[in-house]
Amino acid sequence: MPHLVILYTGQLDAEVNMTTLCRQMADAMLTVRDEQDKQVFPTGGTRVLAYPAPHYAVADGGAAGREAGGTGDYAFVYLNVRMGRGRTEATQQRAGQTLLEVAKTFFAPVMAQRHIGITLQIDVGPEVFDAKHSNLHPLFQK
Image (tube, rainbow, N blue to C red; front, side, top):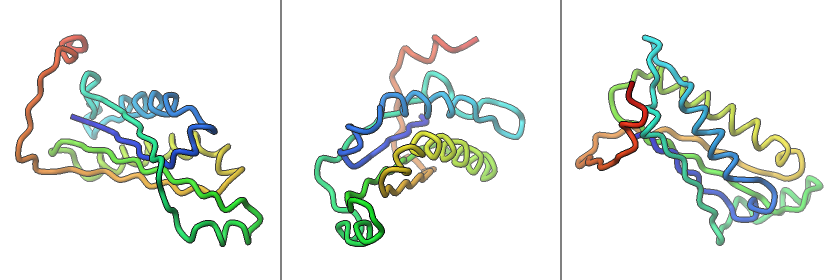
């Protein structure tokens, strides 16, 4: 059930390839190992989805950015990972740091050109209903 949902200010579509980011994040999720060296995110259950926000307001509307010599056209990216219960805090932290590093590297060229905020959060929750129906998982069972 590991899902990563990326919400971002829509102007970034002209500057980055979000499909590339989705693939990089999914690939990074598949590298995360727990303390027993077990893959944390099951291959068949790993999903990364990205959605642009066509309407948004970020920070002060651009005043400080213009004052600092920028355009004042701020961008923002919110990455939310949803993990099932049962992983240690150390594993959750490892997953977060791994994904944050991918995001920082991916957006570095954009950050050199504009002001952008990036937030990554991991949610682990007690599901009140958790049903799955998929023919993907059998592809990855050994």
